[in-house]
Image (cartoon, rainbow, N blue to C red; front, top):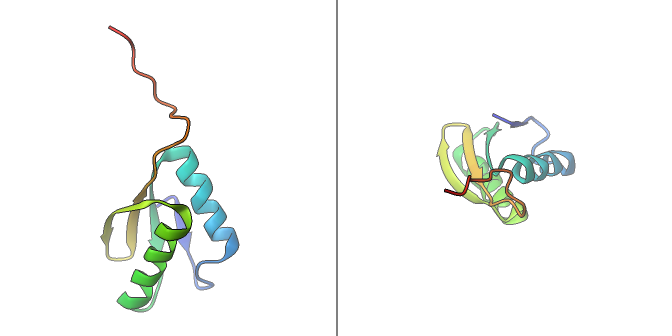
Length: 79
């Protein structure tokens, strides 16, 4: 995971780190440490809403998020 959410939950600094990681990588994994499934689901939903990203997959405590970069880093050669 690129970002890990600890016992303090989704703090402003954690959200900023997720935002920066999405801007740089487009596709990231986040480890969501929450006691129960409803709390995990709420954190995942909050991440999607606040970062305007899409949930790709959630397995256990790890969730993957995608948001297309404004300026993609990958360029394809012209043939």
